[in-house]
Amino acid sequence: MNKDDLANEWQLLQIQFDSYEKFSLAIKGVSFIFFSTALFLNAITLYVMAALLVLWLQDGIWKTFQQRIESRLLQLEAFILTDNEGVAFQFNRQFLENRQSGLSLIKEYGSNALRPTTAYLHSALFFIALLNLTLS
Image (cartoon, rainbow, N blue to C red; front, side):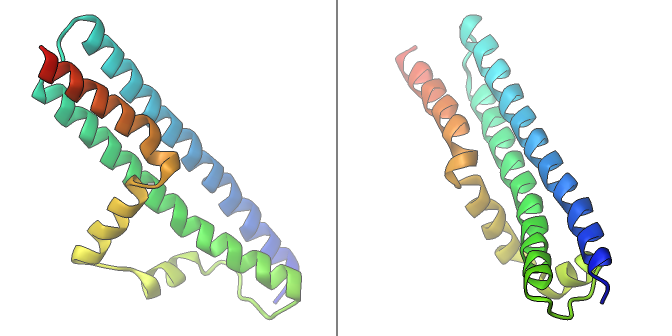
């Protein structure tokens, strides 16, 4: 396999990987603004808390997509580094071969939602909202 093909795929996927990180930060920003507005208006309700949970889980799903790209990036880097005969442009095939379904997929989303880089802001906002709700 041509190393240029592997490098081209790596570059394409790295751009996507970084893009997912930007959108994850956008989800966190929306959560923070939504929470801050509700707190400022003294409108923390169960609906606000449910919305915060939805945003948190959406971020977990987004990070799961990013993790799938990461696994292919690491594979490409190993091929490029060791001169192994890797085959470029196999992201979707590799994903389908390793795709989980049902409960396993839900567990994968949940585990990504609980990763520290995903959970730190969402959990803080949720628990502050919960505290505010119980003290009201």
